[in-house]
Length: 246
Picture (cartoon, one colour):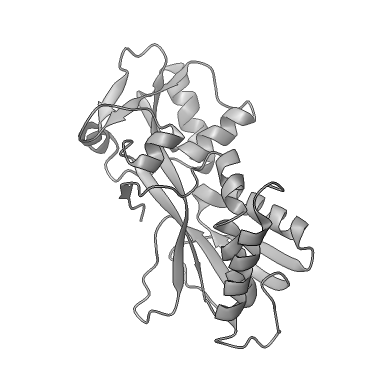
């Protein structure tokens, strides 16, 4: 993180400051001071926590409180959100910026002779393509590993963190997925160039007039990219074909 070009981040903060000047904030926050609530989808709470922790470590005058999203998110001033979809904003007030890519993985028992599936087959098997998260994520991995369930649909970032912490049970494998062409595994390169078809985008949503919210957004698209990569998400690169997780 310390090796990333500092000048680029400073430019981003300058832009964030300029945006914040469009709507003066009563608390006179700056892009790196003040307080903000960050609401995150359950699936990306870990990512939100890591990003908030490191940002506050760099800028100790910034206080970030994390809140789990419960149902549809309705942002207030002084809040930002990390979501798997851009929220409805009929007034065009909010800014929704893509900050990272994630992918859906199909996990099967390692004894399963299947090595790949098509997107159509995945959709037929899992319907709405909602990945298991939280306790359901751990439960379904255990069920697949024990042979009690055929497959589980999970996020790449969640599987990466579970694997890093040693909580992925033995006896699992990840299937390659094919869309219009050859079946590929969910490696970072394949996610960025769009050859892996089950990709979803993580958005950061905020009011551009909020200085700290804009500063945190500048962080996520600059220094935060390296942090995303370390926790199983894929930094922004070439346009990936995305699915929407409502």
